Length: 112
Image (cartoon, rainbow, N blue to C red; front, side, top):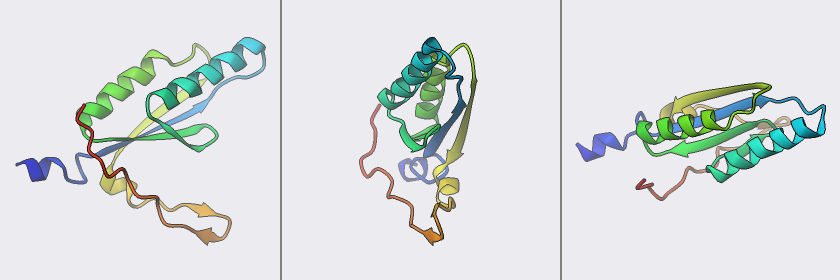
């Protein structure tokens, strides 16, 4: 039972895509605060406005989705995508014409 719980279909990855306005000082502050809160919640930057996070389970993923929803700025567009570890394994990353392998996922299991 425990073995099946840790398979690639229960381990999740979250992606947050956002396009936030930065025309005024307040909007820039809100956008910067949003990025800082994402990083404080364990997200890492894939691209300038694309952040990803590994979640050990669907329950953990739901907690982080709820947390991101709580600090979404009042203006701008924010999208959250949840995929399984199996789907994440099919991502192709290109830096120019060269293809690099995916970085290894976290080795340590999260308990909470």
